[in-house]
Length: 175
Image (cartoon, rainbow, N blue to C red; front, side, top):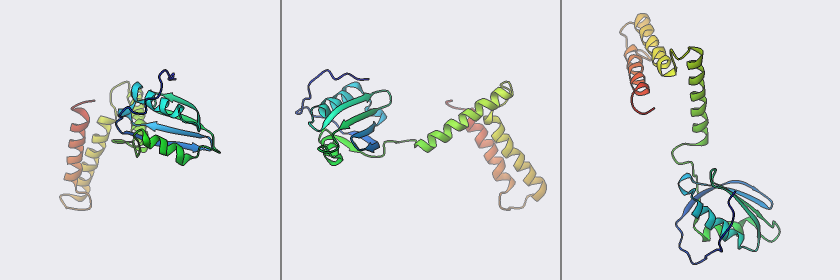
């Protein structure tokens, strides 16, 4: 938890900070600060500025998660006043999941977990980086045997290319 140690300097210039409203309940607002703005100085500035506002009773921050929890008087301090205050110090409300959404992150973590399970089950002999291209290669051979060289819905050479390409991409470069 970040301790508030300095007075708010309202004349200090500040660069825009991308944030997202995570939750809004009466008297409580939680923000998520974009990864690139999760610096002690920036979050300290936001906390100090908010604490100086009469309708804000308490501000709690977590730099690691980029979370700012704002407790405010729901009768005198409306959400629009809080948002206006935040905009005054350079807060921009936008989709901050630049590069990877939460859904994409969840799918990626699931595939990583599945890959680790396959690797453990086979004592490190194979993993999904081998099994996926192998499966596509097997489908390519099957299509070639069943359909011959016909150019059907999924021709054998397309599956063969995907098998090679995925094997190459999954087994070279950064891991």
